[in-house]
Length: 451
Image (cartoon, rainbow, N blue to C red; front, side, top):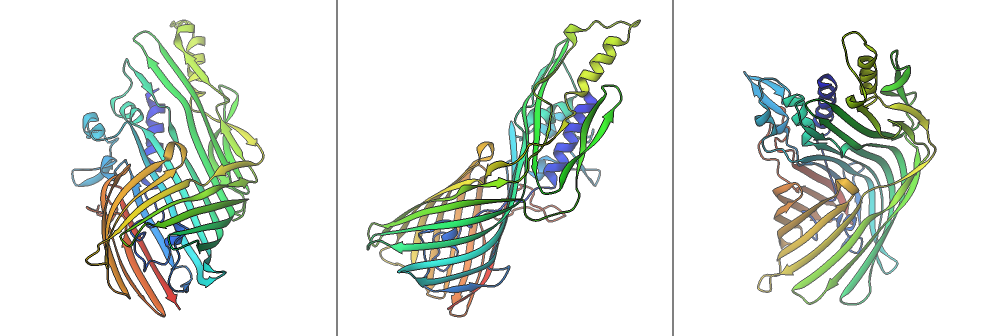
């Protein structure tokens, strides 16, 4: 059984180490009036000028966020980089600082083309973008088993899995001033799904008593990608085909359609205070297929029902074959269409303008992404200054699901040219491969042409 656990641990750690980037709407620019893409976080916020983005570089956001750091996975042993599964890394050393349930998320956002303009008694934007979103969850118990080996103990490996989406969107936004105090806005998004993946270990319990073993596993993987199918192999002992990989006959970038809405409002109480609230990505994608791999419900192996002796191998063979059913998933084929969300987000903000120097503003905001087991929240305190109309800058500090980090923005915005560079999370110490050791980093940049 230890062989199977080690295989599972290695697969999990390999997947995590190759998926260490995460991105979202830029939070450091939320209170910067020179940042042209604030409407993506709150559709009620308009701009003073119209603009056209540079194709592909109007607003590019890449981030690394997670509760499992690269320093928890990779170690230096005798001058060489190795993983925590290396026998020279003790179990206590590997498990120290690791949360009971670690997470790493993936979410990339790129504005391919955007146009903003004043019309219809308000401000409007039309944009085309590409987005991807993924997350993975890893229970600490899995690493403990892989490091310590099997002992007389109980292990709960449930909530181990991952989820991912990739899609393109066309967005139509309009913000409108209702009166001197209230401004509202809405965005309609037409979504074109590229691919979707969900892997869930609903139940995974091992009870290893001194005289008996008992294992329970219920797992499934859903894939929605055109021309996708599972690779299978055949187990001669159990006479079963099981999934051992996947392939795509020929890639096609379109496999589903959907719709989403953004809703927002900004309320100006007085010259000092402004409050805002928005809900974005309220929608879904209907995928054309659902290729399923599953254990076919709860599978169980229990040595209490078997009698082992040296003269009869039948019980040993049955135990071995039942054990394989705990990790071998069957190809259930295409289940037809399915519907998934894209991860809704709530953003709430309060901004205070310093009365003695209106060019200096302080902001407090909360961003909460609602995405089931992979939800997260972030509270951020900002200070922004705009000494002249064409230049602005800001710094901020945030605390939330992914720890404490610092951010900032520098923004140049003149008629005909706009350049901003920002980070919601400065990377801190880097590995030799320039990856952030704490799995938290962000870069957001854009070039646009205001008019």
